[in-house]
Length: 305
Length: 279
Image (cartoon, rainbow over all chains, first blue to last red; front, side, top):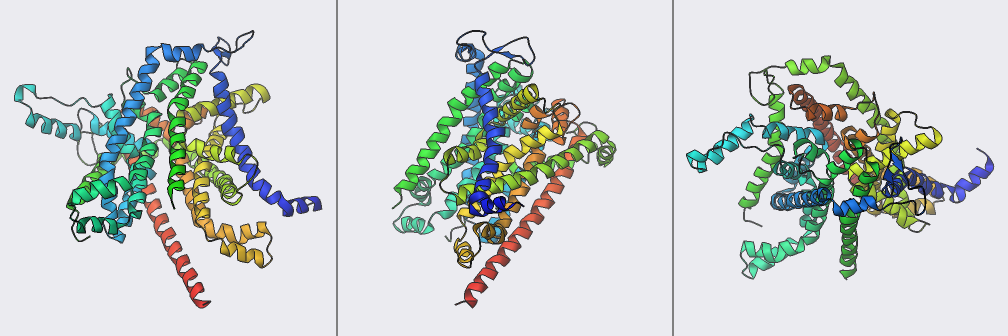
């Protein structure tokens, strides 16, 4: 090694390289690609290869893609389908995940570790295969569908009986598989939050005569709101941009926005339009939620004595 | 609390049934003799035999493993550097942008990351002639980029909860700052680095959306192969493949969990003993 390198490295070169190496990587392979998407959303589709071009004269850019975004019913419907599906999945994850997270805090330490492991384990197995497992279960010939049909038929009058329940290729299937796939993302932050709560508060409320559900409603639930928000965002944000689940179990005529972006880009080869839909998805959904989360976290930190 | 939370335990049982029934059903039906993937037709291990004769699946699995090993290793190096930068250097030019860049891939919908990476590779091919064709290299670069941010998050969290007095002691004893980093800090955070590597490895092994954008002809990873097969319908050999993957990953995670838990416990004990001995 030359001596100037040693001097530089020992002075502050080592710290500069720690910052610079990952910084440049992320700028080059994440920021610049994203900038390309933003620029492309103002271009138009051409018959050239790549199928993108800018207007020949000033102002060179076109807002036509964004115009179509608010003018064309297809996109508005896809955005609302995404928001509704993601919102339903988030609420269901909360309903299923909250008692589970609370339950895990109420068992002894060794059980806790086993149960947490069991929550995380499906997350480590292939995501695609977990979706695939549900395709098998929801099919009209599967034991699960037959069982469900039998249960439903036992309460319905005989002349209304189903032969099977058409679950596949519907928004019901999408929400079900979203809940299945993202449930750990709800349970883990909720558990982290509930575990830190001071149980003496519960005992105090009990001593003062509250019934168990009142203790839950007045003490545990308000204190767990940061956990609910964290888990909710971790489910809602990825669920709203999901591509795999709607493509495999969803209804092709009522797609979610991730599928619209994918089809616009790969099938229709309208890259500028796909870019505009993507930018709008980020601006409408992800950025506001992240900003909210950021300020909420700051307010929480600031509120502490 | 002396009351047994019966309601909560019932919820836990139903919740775990919800988690594991689809997986168990898939495992059971991998031993199905019938071609119909979800109708029982007797016990058989034929699909496992078919799986090992299928060169396409084996090649895809090998490619996936190769990409996962390489991308997880680079992602761990870059992610550890990024975590160190965020946790140890509180002020440098562009820190806000940097921390934004570390969190953004975590929340960016995968479709958008995939499209933007593909556009970068297409633009680069137009302007500088590289990459000539998409495949192994482009997939690896894409995987490094999004999994390094997971590693960075884990390493940063570990560093900010770490006791810095050990580092200060090393400095007082005359170590240069970068020597402290290599001799003191890195060994202490090594479990976090290891779990970061494992996470990066599994994320790479599992990714389908981003890979689907940046891949090219001839480079079919295992998830891409499963994706194209599953879109055509449920087939029993996928059940067998799923079972194998679940068993391998499950056993691997369980072993890694136990080993790391033991190592942590031992380190804690050593630290306690060292403190007690010095009192």
